[in-house]
Length: 452
Image (cartoon, rainbow, N blue to C red; front, side, top):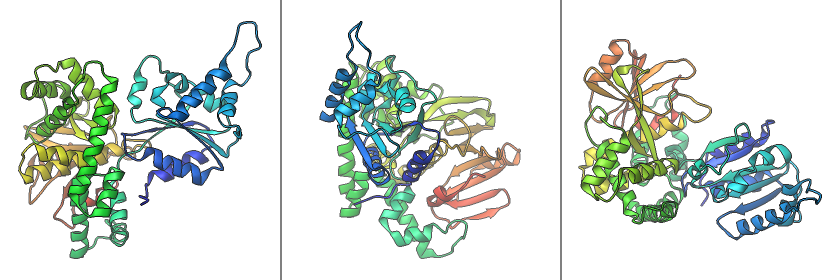
């Protein structure tokens, strides 16, 4: 089953760009990076070389590289050792614009990663590098190749991508919204049903495929658990002081409990708050340093994302990493279900997590909204779910995720006092509408919305 991904168009744009660069694909494990890259390469190039540094092809290429670069003082130096290495690896290799070379799991070799500048500047062939744990390249032996890389992040499937696979007819109707508002009850009911399923299973391709084949949330969750187990077991190989993979589960459950609080942010950083919870509730053997490194690992691995706090609606009082969210609603749903929270609290937290992910994507290049990360705000003793400021017009939006007939008194007060230009309500039980500076939107249409 092929799941259409919108990122494919970005890959084509990179190929056609006259500014020749190496493409670095970031993203969490199991988001479909290898599949979409190979599909793109097979369809857009005449020649493809695929090297996986985790597999036999990686060992073979490294052997070719060593042989091509061997040199003894006094002997003639090889003129094009990297070209020679690829020629040894693939005798039919031709350095042309119709050739693409994919190096997967690049984090396994600093030596190869550090060749990026030469890949970009000395080859006509296109290069794509990718890895599930590119946070590893922060180690000193990995050199940063500024100016030679184009970076693209691949996330789990968005709701829009899920909807296209779930119901093509419903998807086509969805594409006309919200620019052409509809009062069709059946349409909105269908979209809300699809959205609720998406919140529970998330967007990992294998999880989505399992759901579409079995039409069972339980079966889909089983596929998700396998992904979690693979990630946590593989992650321990990068740590010398984390022997028990349960530390990641403890962090995930603590994130859920923090997200479910009614508070105005944290007194400490999210790392310090999580460390307190993990130590208090689970294990006093987990040190602050270990907890902080594990959280950073989860961030660089694309599992968690940070959210900042803007105090009293003053954008200059910007405090990073005051809250964190899951980068997949299926993960959030799974761990929230283990906390014992009531269904209303779980639904509210999942909706908020979904909005966070959407705002985070809008901060990738080309950026649509400002700030380093998504941010929430405090004002006059209350809290506002999110602030989004348009890059194009500097229009500032207050974003409130509401269920039922909630009015968001703090956001209304901030809007009245001129702290923002617009207020956006995101609800699940509405068909939408506009009243002066206040706009109401069905939450399942957020991906169609533009911050202008």
